[in-house]
Image (cartoon, rainbow, N blue to C red):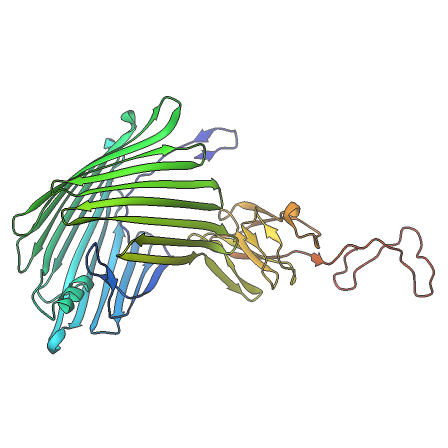
Length: 456
């Protein structure tokens, strides 16, 4: 939307499509992870060797073209590298293609190297109500091994295992605004070099509705059919309903049942009444044809001036337990100093505040706080537009005072602005002032700080 000088507003919509590997021109997105893989199936997952390091990155090379790549390296005998390109073709959709090479040494010294090729395509159809169709295709030669396949071959001492050859995936989703609901259809097929194919079909519906005084309820139901190698099949029905509890709490229940006697039920409670901290807990019970188990989990996320921290825990009595901690944010370093801050998206401009070694000065609704060196970083709003950044005077520490509380500045895309704020820290004193000779200063005299030059 654009508001003209006469007050009129012009609004239009630009529909396009994207694949997961696209980035804005000049932007670099990357992810690094390390650890040990989980292996052993649904009921007895455990960490196994080798330790591995994973990295992936996307670079917006041109306005509608991105280059991306990835790498997996392990302390064992497996490594793989991928390189690809993504292209936004406007009305024709978006397309990406990549190639991956793997090198592995299997038990008993057998070496195996191969390639895998993948194509992804996505398009939005305007006339049918923002419908998105996604098509994916992958072909792997006989000697290519993915990380899961490598782990499976290690577990079987190099023995034969299902070896993927081709995979197809088609997903079609349709929004139905008149009914306040959406629908999606997914079809996939997986072929093997040494086994028959697997076919998977899924149809799902999602709806938001009201029931009496309850507003904002949501429900979904999914039907799935899996046809396995060897002729077996499994049918599944999954349903969930979410019920708001007050203005900022939610209770949900989900159930999944299959034709083999499996039944999984989960109850979840979420609380987000505090805009800076959200948490949820859940409990579930799973019944299989071979037995049953229960599970409990919980998580909390807190938005802090120096980033977003999260913790989660999961317990399956007698089988599995986990604890996770994470931090997500940004680090900005310039010649004036460095500071952690909340995450800044893409080329969003940011402002570095310097209070001269005065720590704990809150800025922009506590979205940023100066560190022990007096440096803090906050978002500067939109590029090329005036942004007002204010010190939260009401939240200042009792022994801190600032001379100016509002900063106005216009920054270009990706810029890091810098402004120094005169701040002082110390106890307030009520007393009598005497000159060196013991006389009182003239009425109306100003007391000036020798350090900052400010009037005390």
